[in-house]
Length: 261
Image 1 (tube, helix red, strand yellow):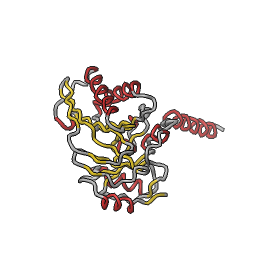
Image 2 (tube, helix red, strand yellow; image 1 turned 180 degrees about the vertical axis):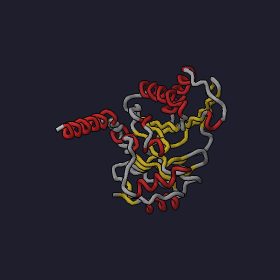
Image 3 (cartoon, one colour; image 1 turned 45 degrees about the vertical axis):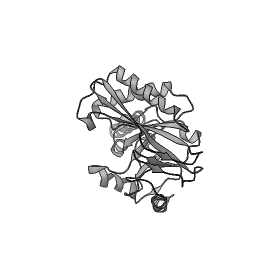
Image 4 (cartoon, helix red, strand yellow; image 1 turned 90 degrees about the vertical axis):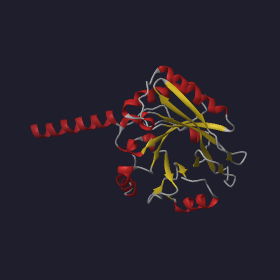
């Protein structure tokens, strides 16, 4: 009898732990509600001619600006390169944030910096055909509270109908819970240039497993030169990065390599 009670108690404790620690999946995805295309090409800082895309099926996430945190300053560097797309293309303005990981200089992470970042990101909504926002910030552990507060401020000030996306290191999506409950519509796992985590994460996906964080189960971030040996979930958005200027041939090649289930 004592053994039975002990087993029941142990099971109850385990179930309670699972329930309390499970990430809550967001109830909606603003990108889906806005009918943003499910295939999105990243257009980085170089001249890009994407006039060949079918704008009914393909969206573009373009680097609109790079903001660098140094001491208590925010350095603004807007896009300088040309970008040619069909006139009715749905556009996502990407803001790249760089800090100590890139500059080697410790930022203050002050409220003033956060307010300036929010103001500059909001200005990208004024760019032509922009209907969504994406933040690309490889935040260090010491910068996560600042980043969370930034996203909360940004979500509060963005119009309700403007989706907010972020990129995420793929390792954050596997066992790191800090993305949980961020006020964003998706966290795009960048399944390329993963360094030491490359083999383990690609094997995890190839074996039919998935990312533990619900926000990371809405999209994939892949690269033209790193094809993935996995079947893509049809319901998820796919962002594609090219380390050189896009061509029709590159796009058709990566499309052919993608197996959808």
